[in-house]
Image (cartoon, rainbow, N blue to C red):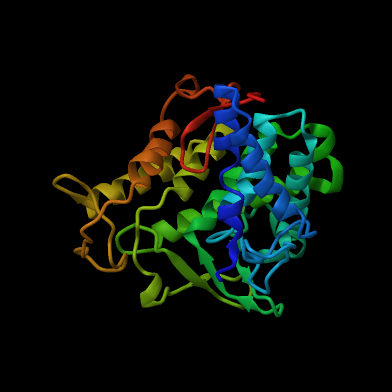
Length: 322
């Protein structure tokens, strides 16, 4: 029997709860809430292991597995904040999100507390989201999937009340992480021959923990949206034109190296020119990658963040719906 994947158990909530709000049928919300409560019943707060016990077990327990923010985990953390946006009266979601954010530095290199002097001199530290294995050792790699994180942090900075952000130096720490991880995510794209980001990259175990050459198993690109997503949120937070400049670089790389007559294909090796293209186009290329790039260059009125939020697949849902 296969274990339950954290991101799968925690990625239906806002959609099912929205169905209840729109139809009046409470069954959808009950089903989603039951799954969410099952995850919480494991009794772990902050960063969770990516696997939980199989569905048939009477008691939900954590399964010895890695701690990560990318593949197998990502949207569980994303939906803690977004369930609170959907139902602000339930502050438990916000509190869980705050606990995750307080724990996040444990899987970030360099450690934010070790580089404050550099940041005080105005240097943007290129933070990496790595993975910690069940035995406490580090897997020195960063998934492109984890590049949604700085956008989520930026959304938190825009939405979490100031009385929460002033505690534990969250305001300053979150901003440093959002800016620094975004810089690393853009580097994933800009550092390759094609300007396309690999699926993941190895990270040096030695400070300042720069990216090192991705192995052949990670050099493909599905044209994933996470960096474009974070550029959108960072631009909405700061108005800094560098995020639009970086977005234009992503867009041009896709046009130059992934365009085919009837769409945009995945690429086998981001280091090779001309690119070897796969006979596929991922659904998220239109639903998310190009949507976030469009919103990045659109006026704020194109997407009203005061009344809507975007789910993990880039679809708009109403805030304060429950």
